[in-house]
Amino acid sequence: MTRCDMGTQPALVSIVVPVYYNEGSLPQLFERLREVTREQPWKAEFVFVDDGSKDGSFKRLAEFAGEEPRARVVKLSRNFGSFTAIVAGLSHAAGDCCVVISADLQDPPELIPKMVSLWESGNEVVLATRANRDDPWSQRLFSAIFYKLFRLLAMSDMPEGGFDFVLIDRKAVDVLTETREKNTSLVGLILWLGFDRAVITYDRQQREHGHSMWTLAKKLKYFVDSFIAFTLLPLRLSAMLGVLVAAAAFVYAGVVLAAYFLYEIPVRGWPSLMIVTLGLGGVQLITLGVLGEYLWRSLDETRRRPLYVVQKTVGVLPERVATASGPPR
Image (tube, rainbow, N blue to C red; front, side):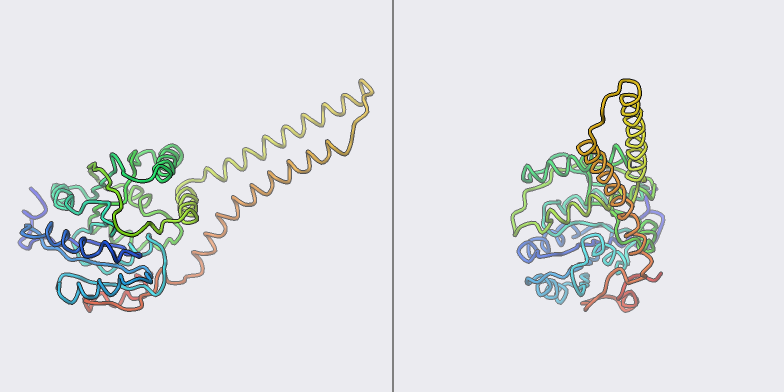
C-alpha cells in the first residue's frame, strides 16, 4: 500500500528551488517543471527562493508566479548561502514531501516522478546521486576528494557521488526547519536524520546557462563546515599532534642531555632552539586554529540572529508568511 492509497486526497509535492544568478536557465526550468508535474496522481507546488541575486532572476520568478498559481517566490534580503536558501524554501513549503533541486538544470527535473514514486513506497528520503558529471576537471576533483574524505572521516553512508538533488518527507522537513544550525551541511543533516531512504543515480549535465557562483572560498568554507558539524576528528587530530610533538621534544631533550654529560659534545644553541621554537609555535597555531573554528561556530549559534531575512514574497500562502524571518525557535 502506497502513501496515496492510504488517504483520500492526493499528496502535495513541494518542489523547492534555490535561485542565485540563474536568470538564463529559469524559462527552461519553468517549462520542464510544468511538464513533469502534468497529469500526475499527486499535486505540486513550486517554491523558489531568490538568494540575493542581482540579475533579473527575481523579475522572472515574479512573472512566472503571476501566471502559475502553484508558484511561490521568496526573496531574501541578501545572499545567505545555498543551505539557508533551501531551509527558507522548506519553511515556506506546504507539501507532504519536498524535492530540492538546483536551478541550473544540471539536475534533471524528469527524475522527480520516480523520486515521488519511491517516496510513496515508504521511503522518507530519496537521494539522487551522481553517477557521472559533465563538469570541469577541477570541480570533479574537488568533489571526489570531499566526498571520499566525508565518507572516511564523518559519515560512511554518504553515497560515493554525493547528492544535492533530494526528496524528503514532511517529517524530515519539520526536523530540518527546526534545526537552527547555521554553519553546517544540508546533505550531512539529511544523512544524520537516519530515516529510511532510497538511492537513484543519474548523469549530471553540463551547465548551459551562465556560470557557477560556487567560488573557491565558498567551497573551502563548505568543506570546513561539513567536517566540523559532524565529527570531532579535527580536535582529536590536534590533540594527537600535540602529544606526538611533546613526545618528540622529550626524546630530543634526552638526546641533548646525554650528548652533553656522557660524551661532552657541546650543544649548538641558536639553530636547534629556533627549530624547536618555530615547530612548537606552528603546532600551537594549528591547534588554536582548529579550536577557534569550533568556538566561532558556537558563538555564531548563541547570537540568536535569524537564519535568514525575507525581503518580499510573491504568491506565498498567508499561513506561511509568519516565517518571514526564519522558522520559529
